[in-house]
Length: 233
Image 1 (cartoon, rainbow, N blue to C red):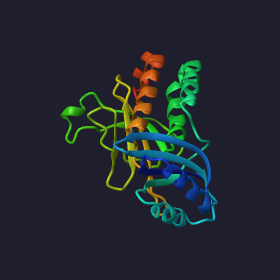
Image 2: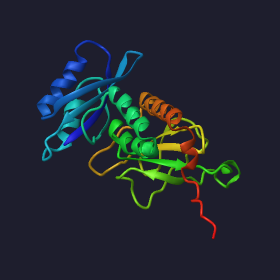
Image 3: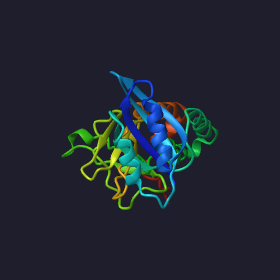
Image 4: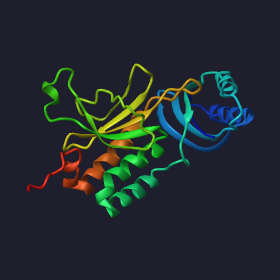
């Protein structure tokens, strides 16, 4: 299976090589490395690896924990092939080519781009601020792995951010800026794997996709979640 491994490590020569060697010795085949952050002598790296399905992840975690200064922030299952920013442009081209299904195209593709489990386009009522607890969002479109019934996190006030709910599910939230629409992406906690929270660079990437899609889709977004028009007699 394909795994995403997020590691915080000292930003000094040799440490990245130690991590790569440990992954290899543990049985992981590295297919991609993405540097998410370099700050204050520390780096945050995402490794996408092919992992033998029968092997125990604990062996991998123990090996990484033995490297001085290295911390494992999360290990979780990734869906599909490793992604690059070039695929963002391809996705936006698909949205533009078929705007009638543009929102569904975006929602269905985002989990694969961000190594997430599911995504929904939620519709927040215009009077959310006056409601008890705020929010009250409903689902406009959901990706295929969205749980049923779905309990959405509190997405208001509408601004791009990451958050974690009490059950351990990590969310990234990015508003469209019109029609009360907000894109919610989730990584779920499981008994065997523990996903990392969405990094600020991932939230920025999601927000850029949402902003570009808003420009492309325009007034079509106002129809999401609107009640159907019933023809008179």
